[in-house]
Length: 392
Image: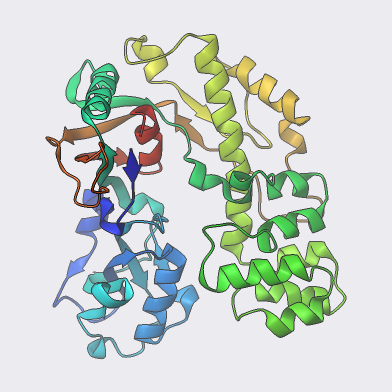
């Protein structure tokens, strides 16, 4: 089975809460405040889309905010806001052309505050699964039947794990930058963050990681070949004679935050897996008390108690950590914040299409069927986790 053979095979649309959507003054609306755009992007990261929007309307990249990060390798719709618009009356309604450059922005209104995660209620997915035969189709149908929520026959219950795309450099077997930071190994962390090439890197990211990997330690040579990008500042800091701690501190705040959260997410997954294995929780027939359980991420100040405590203690021990040790020596930011996450999550409104001909299948292949799966997940949950449960 194959997913994402074409960008439109994986489609995501951000669904706003009633409060946030009600706070957006529709056009023509007041020509003041913060502009709200509905952005459609293909094969672009959310920060890349934000940079394009900023350039198009003449504001700084830092003036553009978004409610959530969306997958690069997908066709996605999400909401971005822009402050600092100097001449609101001259903003055009539509910017870009998705068919030619993978980016389009539509001005939909005005808000009094920038977009934040709380704007999002859920994300709606439409995913085409290709290269299937009849046995594959039946396997997916059986998996859906196994995961069905007994209280809602159009909802599936899955463990709310973080998707692998959350894990950055660790996906390539290189380890977590945050683990190096905790140990005070700032050089190791920097290598993982800016000098670890990955197969799916593209554009300036691809150039930077390869140049930095090949010429690590020769900072002037790296600067001569490195493209303009936010991470370039860290190389400039090293070239000036500063240490690796200062170089890490010069990275974009989002990069720092995401490397910490990636490690926390992986630890959370370990706790969830250990807890489920220990309680023989394998589906929606578990007690409501366990289905409604939430588990916090690990960090200083976390209270380890409740049915998941043993799993958390074992996970910390396996990493040689305590909650209070999860700090970065000499830096106040980024911090290992503690937030709770539901153990189980519901994929609502799940619909599986009838099989149809896969127009991209090889002429002589026996796997010439495709299906379309649509569903919605709460903010922060991963479609890839559901797909894995379905065997895709």
